Image 1: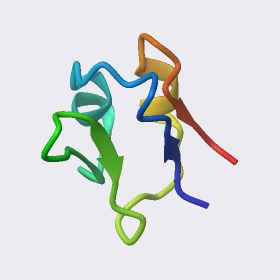
Image 2: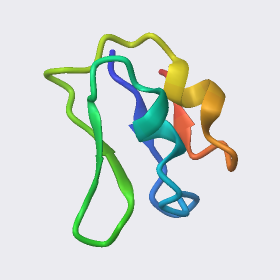
Image 3: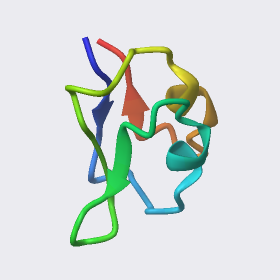
Length: 58
């Protein structure tokens, strides 16, 4: 299952985008991270690199 971004916690820093090996994350129109579920390989790199723990794996 792809990762989930908590938009209430996300600060739009882009750390997750930089850590994703398949470029599954991007910033939405509000500057907050969102995951493309069709591309995400559920590796957890973005979860580990998020400085505010806004991304989780379920």
